[in-house]
Image 1 (cartoon, rainbow, N blue to C red):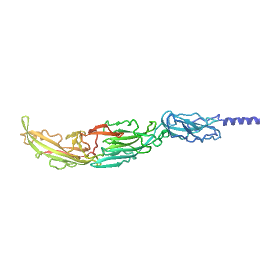
Image 2: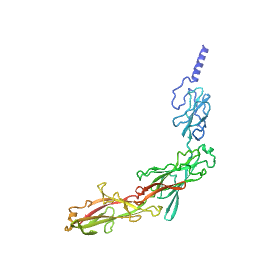
Image 3: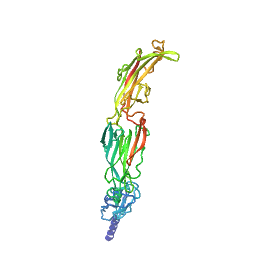
Image 4: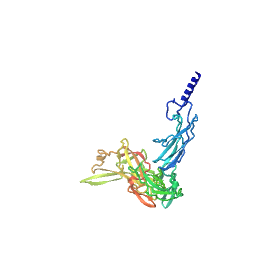
Length: 457
């Protein structure tokens, strides 16, 4: 009887230890018998860069069973994507070749070879760049420009992630270099040059210019040069008055390109500055903010008699003058300044109602950096109307005795200018775009005042 009881206890123990009973399996949990666990294997090791179709060895290890059983390993060669599992095996080293390019995460898992349901958690991942090509980095950006007869060179800080504003007409030169991160670096016939060449591209996309988005193809189509590995290469661009992103990428021995090209955003043109503006009456007196411009019916600037049809009419002319001054950035191109202007009057209390013209129209300055424009109103009435009642009483102007918001701003390009944009390819200057000045230019910040206008007698 004791013998049979002993045999029964041994059989129960064997059934328990062999794992006939398993608790429910949860995601990524250590599953096993009540007294067996398998530790997480080491993070896989292998090449960080590998070509498509090229075999590489992936290695893990270090997993153990708490009961001392033999462990098996498997790999997930696309752990962050669609998953690509290897077969289980006792060998902790597996050869792998990917059939498509991409960034692959490789992780390892272990299990008890005797009790396959006893598994470890997945290891940390190894990131493998499959067929990703070389890496390109910017090393220096220089801005060349001319003011008058003086030439200047500024180094641009392109590491602050802030688009750099440069003078209109500047030449931006970018120096860059490539590092071959693929198997091509060891197979290239020139171990110094690493067989890298370079390409460049430009993107234009301005919020201020509707429909301005454009992007050049990568050029040249064939490798541009054979600069030694690690040495400076460069590309140049003549900057217009919009926003650009200048990009460069390296190409390796097999024609594989950098999938994340180095780039720098550039904004062409410094904003001009509005220095002052005035509204002056016919006597040359300035009308300040909140003040009233008064026209006295009995003191017109000009009056006379004119024949309109068969009738003799009287005329009285009243006017005031808008004047403004501004300047462009001192590092702007030779002869630059505020060339064209825009001003408008809006009735206070009647939004969107424009008076006194010039709304939606350009006004050319009388000289670079200066505006002077005159508003005239001519009263016409019968010659026998001594007091001008026909106008003053019966048909008064609609703008009389009202307040207006006046605003003015200037632009740094003439309204009739055409800007041609060029790039250099293999040392040859080539035109790529031409724009009218209506699409370009930088504004001063708008400024203005409120004033009242009254015609009295």
